[in-house]
Every structure is written in C-alpha cells, then in structure tokens.
Length: 118
Length: 112
Image (cartoon, rainbow over the protein chains, first blue to last red):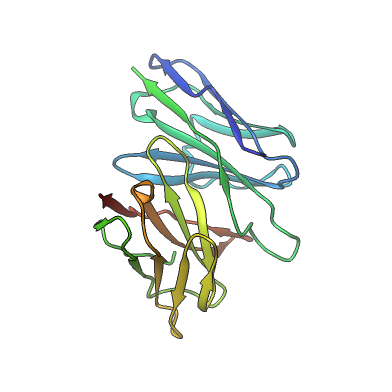
C-alpha cells in the first residue's frame, strides 16, 4: 500500500531554531506539494514541484522558508529561523501528472508534521 | 483565483443521504471540480473529481449543472465514520499548473 511518508510527525522547538521537515513521495509520482494548515488560515499551498523542479513557491515566506527536492524520493521544507507564528501542521502531498495535464487529478497526502515553535 | 463557497457545517444521521453544495461562480473553462475529505489529525483524502454532468464512484456522486457555477457532493447512506471536513476545490492554471485552493470546508457531523 503506497503512501506518502513524512518525518518527523511532531516537532517542538524554540524560536530561532532551524527546522527541517522531510517527505518521501509515492514512488512514480512526479509532483510534490507542501501545504500548511492552521485553524485560522486553513490549508495553504506553500510550494509545488514537478519532476523535482520548483514551479511555484509564491505561498511561501521567502526570507525564512525554503523547499528542495534533492532527489526523486525526498522533498524537504526548511524553516530558518523559526518563529512562533510558524506553528502549524505541515502536509506533503504527491501525485502523478501526465504530460498533457498541468497537474495530477489526485493528490495523496502524508500524515503531516505538527510543528510547535515556542 | 476561482473562489468556492460552501456551508460551514452540516448535521446528519446514520443511513441518511447527505448533499453538500459548493458555489464557484467564477469557474474557468479549463477548471475541474474536486472534493477532498479530511479526518482529524490526518491529511486530506481525494474523494471525487468532475468537469460536468455527473460522476459516480464507490464512495460518492458529484453533480455538476450545465453552467458549472455550482456542484453537489452526494454521500449515500452516511455512517458515523463519514464525520469529517469536506473541501470543494476548483483549480486554476497558474504558471503552468492547476493551483488548488482549499477553502474552509464543510464540517459534517453524523450522529447515531
């Protein structure tokens, strides 16, 4: 049963510390999405990768957030330095988009990383 | 971006059919309509997607009128385990991909 995996599942850190969240997309998927979910803002798209290339990161605070895909099996989201307002659940999702479509029909979400910044 | 409007919450009882309607007045020609379900402490899960008329799968049906300005997700004979938040999404081509925007969703509570 193929699933998106995310690590860590929970992270508590202090303001100013660096946080790295990792995601392993489903094998064969060529798109990866990072979302952030809070009670106030709901689910927000932070970044989108297709074939490991970043296509959109307009939803991401550029000064402190960065997203990368070192290889097809790993996507990372890094926050440096972290702030209390970054506390949220961060979801990674992957999907397969055929060449003729701009995006996948379906996104498969991971279990999320619950981040708390004190 | 095409904006969606759906009820904040709905209540139902086990065994009933539940219909959740979503408005998307500014939907574009190339937009698909997608519904996701989210349980507490889990990521959203794809339910169904459609472009026009009616789509049915083993979980739900999606009804889309000819003008496509709204859509209705129909859940037949709900059970307690269908208690979740349901999101209606309309994609829009942005810099070469369909950017899906999750709204506030509809919180469905199914009671015994």
